[in-house]
Image (cartoon, rainbow, N blue to C red):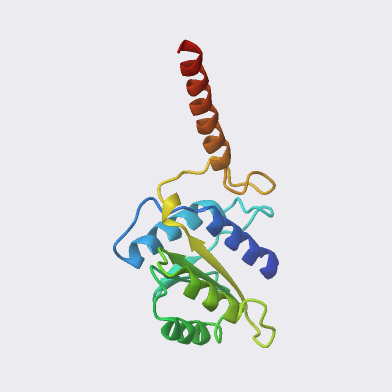
Length: 176
């Protein structure tokens, strides 16, 4: 099996590349999408080299990956106290944990939760946080390989759209 630290970074990076297809009513629908995505992208074709078959199981409101990593996914971490309690309970059982939010309305509270755990050395578990912006739901990335555009070609598409609009405006000015 891959080095656990590198494997965790791979899972975090893959989760960063993932965009939900749409706004779902339930966190479980986001979780199902993420589970399918990670299943397709982790098995046999890791970003850091070939990998064995990866086991991904739904557990509570998250995913357990190879009994090493726990992904807690919530639609909205509105109750910071409850979220902290859940995180504290899960990091007792896992050395690696990823907290994913789809649709946080109060980004400031999300950042406070993140700051509470990121960089804390007194815990044995390594935690990371990923926030999925609703503005990117349904956007399909062209690439998910290391070293390329971290938005998977999204910025190229935006820049191309701006350039096309600018070209159209210039043509319109020349006609007038």
